[in-house]
Image (tube, rainbow, N blue to C red; front, side, top):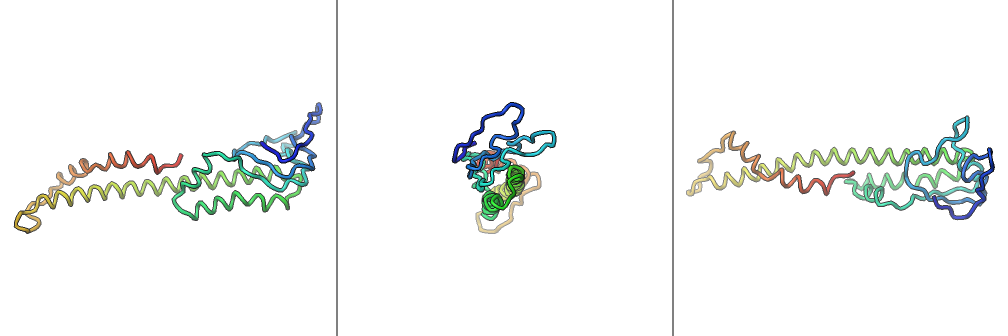
Length: 191
């Protein structure tokens, strides 16, 4: 965790509440987007890491490839925009949050962002599964059309040789869909 200004965070024996308790100089923090980054403290099980940090008004996410790569890989721009809006929301809410609730607000925000990312990852993978089925059917259809063209009579009349049901099944197996999908799918999947 990075801070913009230093605070006296010396530990007093038996009086340890949070890393930045009573740090009025703290204005901005940079944290990783990880759930449970701040433990509950004390017998009342409260978040007190930033209690009495009255000037804490901004939170930035530590640049990690994983989150930014995932968000930029979402299929729909509206999903990407919604996640970016949710990430920026904390800096709108935090200045109005009472000092005793700042850490809890940050934790709730982290859970909200991570929850939305997981939701859109699941939606992305669901749509990808549908697209995979469509791609397989399109490759099969192309293979059937190719066979149909090759099987027509030389005099231009169509349908002289009809593809049997077992032949259609064989064409599905030999359409190459399994090879194409196996080599394309890893580039489209999200972690």
